[in-house]
Amino acid sequence: MKKPVSRYYFGGYAMKRLISLMPIGLMIALLAALPMSSVNADEVSSLRGSLALEEQQSPPPVAKLKLDLEKFERNFKTQPPLIPHKVAKYKINLKANRCLKCHDKANYKEEESPMVGKSHYVDDAGVEGDKLNMGRYFCTQCHVPQADTSPLVSNTFTGAQ
Image (cartoon, rainbow, N blue to C red; front, side, top):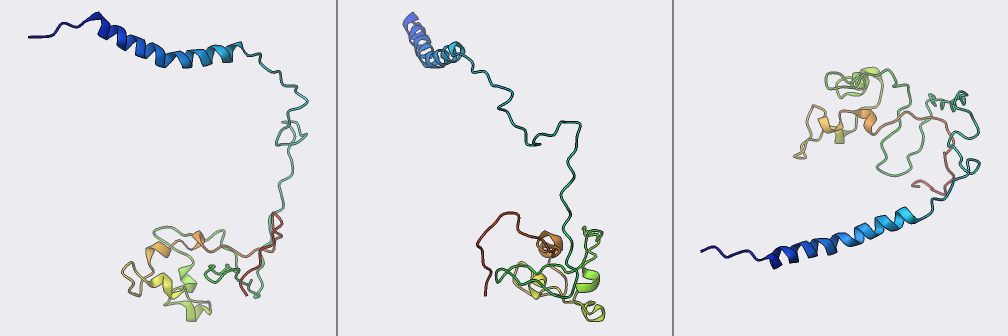
């Protein structure tokens, strides 16, 4: 036999709901009653500085690549070597890797360029093979062209000795 539902059960449920929603309603009412502070247009500053929207700032100078034979010192033991030549137009995708034309095991002696590190030929099982590990295939993910620039922010970092 089904028990009759008393009106006190629904009343208790409604009361719990009302009590749980009351603080939210009170906060909304208080926020609406607060006076809105006016912001003076002279106090607001733009990231563009004092330039109007129609004006354009000249772009920052592009860093010159340091393309001489002098290599930069590495800052820490495992830092990937910097690239001492332009790579902007090199194609590196799943079908082609322009870096391997000169730096692969098979070609580096002919091209008189450094060979890709042996660690790049080690597979996931730790076995060194003849094919480049695809996890190391996209060279510019770690290696960047060396540029003769000054630091963006001052720092006291000293590299490994």
